[in-house]
Length: 319
Image 1 (spheres, rainbow, N blue to C red):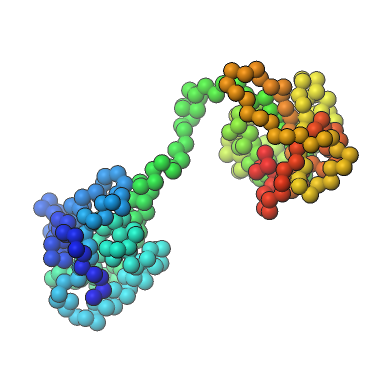
Image 2 (cartoon, rainbow, N blue to C red):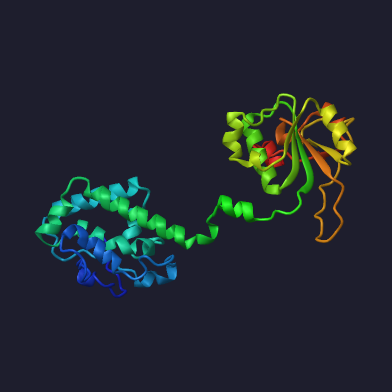
């Protein structure tokens, strides 16, 4: 048989493998499968858990298949369409790990694979019907899987919520970006700086910044919430930062030459709540691997902060 019979009791609408409509359902065969799916416990509720899979209806083929060749062809088309939408055809089997997600749509699948009567058989013969049923099944599985992982959902705040929320004082950290960084990298860094609620971002020389279209594409509006200042050179920025009490660290990659550069410094320790604010820090990032700035720029800084090189990681991750 194409699908094994389930040992669990059938849900309403699936007794003896037939797709029976709920009492309020329309009489048409096309709507009958949807009505039966709606009668299955758990549809429209929050996420279905694997523990409830024992009550899910199992797909059973009736004893009388009619034209066996036609039934086999429908089954092959349906399995092919399931694969096209990214589902394992075995999801219809009760032992499959995702079967409990597909259970509410099994009546509609049964109405296609084993239609009862001339009306359901005519609906099953409609061109593209296999794709329609498979796509509906895939959408339902995706929806229920998303509900079961609600704790991983990222819910963006509305503009009103952002305006109402008090962020508190900015972190005593400024980021200095050297020439050579691409526009998309700058946009990603602006988003990182907004998330960390940093004090400011300094753009040196020809570093792209707002209103560059590529920067705005990657920053997603964060440029409006991060203080940005453009300066001519690193020497000019260093003078300004030291006048405002900043300690300046330059970032070096694992393979960057640092002979003659300021001494390596450890990562800053977390500041405990209620402790006095540490001296403000400025971190200089460049276009090199892991945000390395080069020996010449390091010599302008008070300390060198070296990060290990990780293949494919650039300045935005280093920040």
